[in-house]
Length: 479
Image (cartoon, rainbow, N blue to C red; front, side, top):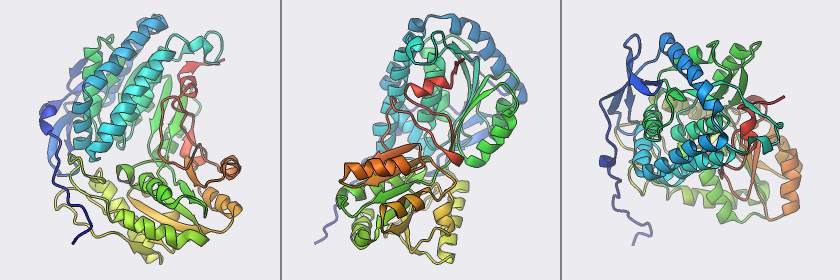
């Protein structure tokens, strides 16, 4: 008799999302075609079907959006904070009302499981708008001077791994502080940002306060380099972040960068193994590993290595890979063919360099972009899979003997975004956290986010903080 539960399919309905055949750019409160008429297609990564055709913004469109945001800035920044807060509260409530629709859309366009977009992404999106609505009339008490002023026009470029959540992280504090926004979503996941544009209209947000430009890296570069922009916020790869830093160097533009990571998840011999395994799985397989702060390096104390690995493999064998709209799915589709190729190339390099690869038996769908949850043992710090960001469901396992060795190995990376510590000793948690060069350190948990808590990194993981009171500073003229 099989001890494995068999689950019947539990699909979420696609009917709750009404997708149009094509979408334009959202500029000055209206949707419009690109000036040169260019378009591109947004695909569903789980099936490779075309979801919609989307306008490709060029330099003329960027200029129009920045000018619209500049014109709107005068009126928006002059509003009392209590009035700006009303719009943010309204947006937050509409997001809650439309959360099922937005969750399905996000899973269709991104490939992530519906239970994640429904239970994690959308509640956090609404929470960020609620939180920063509360700050809008209290900026003089935020600790950034008695009379903090907005910067002006904020250019915001967001990634494809959490499209709507990254939008919320950036748009909510910018609007609360009195700035106006030109936002560019990722080329592979533009649809939820365009639906957000409709939410802005539904909330009665003044024209030009939020503008959405869809397009590729060329669009983003034109936006970041535009002279009419006062603030640049970017979340994405370290490579692109460095290019943005070079572009804005020597200008008056304020910039924040939230870039890549190669986080260490550190398990000590006194850690509760079952709880730690759940944290390890959540740390690397949540959102298919498409997480900048993913716990992609597992550091296990040598004496419990076998026990932890045995429990981890058992747990990985229960993960369900498949249709993102099935409520039973744990791991959805890889976001794009390009990302799948990078994951495949790096895992092949891990095997070629001598690491031992293991993955549970699972049948992958024939259409779409898929990768089975994978772990590597016998990994050294010299392996590419231990040094480079894979951004996929791939875990590298290393061992350590002492806390000092764990700190040394954890910090042996050009990144510094996050880390996790698993131990029953509070004193050890504090000792480790004080020495880990990571912007966020989780203790006996992983991937926990809250709008009241700042997030950001060190070294090649970027600079600046998003979330919490700290997230206001990037959008204020602080003397």
